[in-house]
Image 1 (cartoon, rainbow, N blue to C red):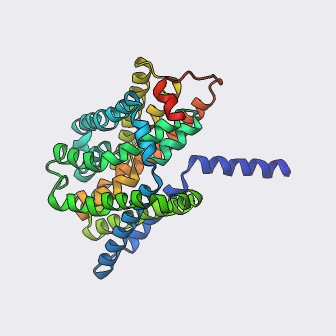
Image 2: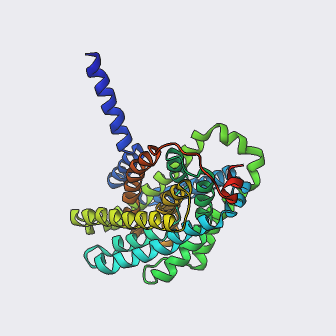
Image 3: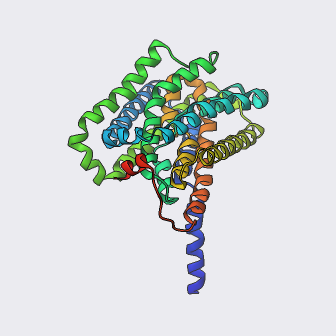
Length: 345
C-alpha cells in the first residue's frame, strides 16, 4: 500500500513536470473569454485594466533588472552576438521560409502569427532557469535574455513593419506612443525605482511572478474575447491547429540544431553553448502578447498570438528535457575566457 501511494505520488510529480500549470490557466482563460467575452462598456474597462497590468509588469521588470548585469554581459560580445543573430536574423528567415511553403494552408491570421512568432525577443525567466539547470553560463544567459527583451521592444515593431507590411501592424505614430507609454516608460521608471524597491522585489519574487503571469492572462482574455465578438474563431479548424503545432516543432528544432552547431564550430565552451542554445531558441510570450495587442487590429490578435501560445508550451517541454541531458554530463572544471570570468566574478 505504501509503495502504491509512493508510485502515485511520483506519477503526479512527473505529470506536473510535463504539463505547465500556466498552460492550463491560459486554456481556462480562453474558455472564459469564449463563454463570457467582454462587450460594450465592459470591454472598455477590461482594456484599461489590461493596459495598467502590462505597465506594472514592465515597471517591475525594470526594477528587478540590474544595469550592472547588462553592462557586464555585453562584454562577452561573441556570445551576445550569436544569440542576437539567432533571435533576430535566423528566426525571421526561418519564419519567412515556413510561411512561403506552408502559409497557403493556414488561415491568414494564423499565418501572420507564425511569422510574428519568429520576430519576437527571447524569454528571460525560462532561459535563465534552464541554463541554470543545465549547469551553463547563467550570468551570460541573464544578460543575453535581458538585452534581447530590451532591444526587442524596438526591433520587433521594425521587423513587423518590414516583413509584414500588409498585416495592419508595424510602426505607426500611435504604435510608437503606445509602446513608449505601456512598455518603455514603465521600464525606465522601474529602473529609477530600483534602489528603493529592488531588494523588496528580490525578497518577494513570487509577487512579481503573479503580476507577470496575471497581466498575460488579462491580455489573452481581452484578445480572445474580442476575437469571439468579431467571429474570427469560426475560421479555425483542427487541421490548422495540428499544422501550427507541427510547424512550431519544426521551427524550434531547426533553431536548436543551428545554435548548437554554431556554438561548437565557433569554439564556445560547453557552458556558453548551453546559454546560447537556451537563449537563442526561445520566444517571449510575456513580451509578444502585449506587443501584438498594440501592433495588430484587436479582432485579429486572438488568432495571431495562437502560434506563440503553442510555441511557449512546446519550448518549455523540449528545453526541460534538453536541460536534464546537459545536466547529466560529467562534472568538469571549466576554463572560462576573460569575458566569462568577468561575468562570474
